[in-house]
Image (cartoon, rainbow, N blue to C red; front, top):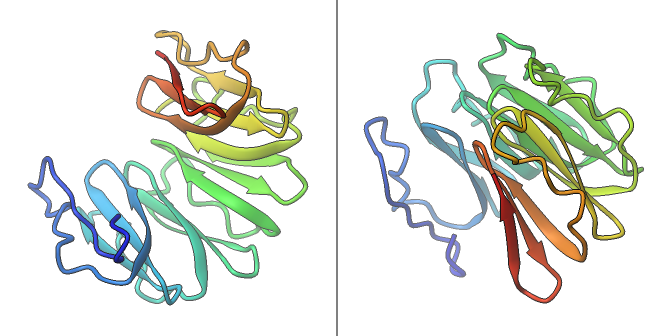
Length: 201
């Protein structure tokens, strides 16, 4: 996302998921596996790419403040803190309509995480690796869903993680002074307060 509100992209494009050169007035972008979603400055959504599960059918959404894209689903939060979702729901990853008072949303591969204003987290979808076991989390300020793991940033700068740990992607218990997190397919990355980066997986 460029400072002038346009978007550039590179990579695999068989499903036109990087056909974003005409996008303008964009405030945020989210990349799924083969679809791309853009949040426009007016609170509407634009999407391109594979649409087998209707994960790009977001044109009717309005007053959106945050977006995220999973394998084949798209989730968002509107200005009232309510959550919307479209796309593949075979694991219940789109069952978020009852969520409210949300401040952040993150779509994992087949699961979805939502951060409430009180610092607690909700999760729905595939839980085969216990990636949705987040009920004990508190004082969370950011969440990120990976393929089979979930990561949360706490207000004290420490990080919690649950789910598949075959590659050590959940080994974050010794991290501190973290200000941002991102969960990838089998890895986790953290941005530290001093501008350096830590990663596991």
